[in-house]
Structure formats: structure tokens, C-alpha cells
View 1 (tube, helix red, strand yellow):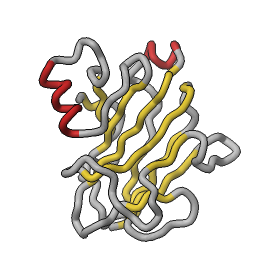
View 2 (cartoon, helix red, strand yellow; view 1 turned 135 degrees about the horizontal axis):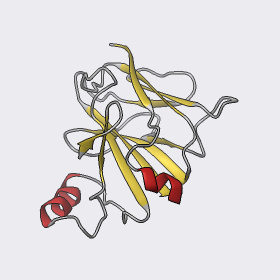
View 3 (cartoon, rainbow, N blue to C red; view 1 turned 120 degrees about the vertical axis):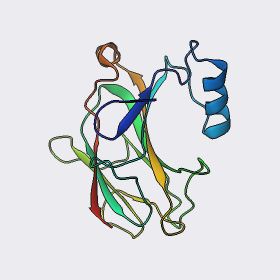
Length: 161
């Protein structure tokens, strides 16, 4: 992965024919199966906009806008196990269809250990656990694909800790 905008990391190797055997093994062992690079583009954040690691006891505001893509999703994973974080809401992600938006098409997802109004992703199973956010962009337009990875990515702001 290479650092792009803010806290986001990007790799064009996930699901790509050009991926090495080691890169393919890392995806197969360490996380959910990646779709073909023709179908999806992946971005991962392991820290907030200030460069601090994402921690389960803190609350974050992830804010973004429209993306020129068929569909996108933002999913929270435990950094150690690479699995969904179990929670009473049974929610691990929000997507471009389900997330509420304002009149400017801006959306906001709060990530943290305690319930929040609006779009909320529960982060805590135990104190001081690290997590990561994965942004999947499905079927980006040709215009968006031409400028990858330099697209307008969401911000990840720590609100409290």
C-alpha cells in the first residue's frame, strides 16, 4: 500500500493480474477476498487525519461527498484479526445507498464505542484495540479511474478519546 490523501493508503495490486504471489497470499490470508481490479478499488485508513492510530475507545467523524462510482462502502475491521468487530447493532459498514446525506450530497459516519445519532459504526469490543477502515469503490467511472489514486477521499477526524 502507498499513502495517498490524508490517512488513506492505496494499492492497485488487490485483485490485479500484476499482483505478485506474496501480495496475493497477503490478501488471501489477511483479509476479505478482493474483487478484480476492474470491478473494485480499495483504500485503507489505519490512522486519523492527524496521524494517530485508530483506536476503539475513541470517536471519529468520517466525512465525504459524492464519488463518481456505481457504489461504494466503508467497512470497519479489527486490525489484528481482519474480521468484522462484533457489536449489538450487527453493523460493520455503511454504503452509498444507505448513508444519510445533506443537501450538498455530503455524508458523515461517526465511528466509536458508544451509540451515536445518525450513521454510526460501533468500534469497541475491548479497550485500546486498533481498527482500520476500508473504503471500497465499485465500478468507478473512466474519469475517476484515470486519476486514481488521486480522488477526493473522506476525512477521518478524531472527535474525542
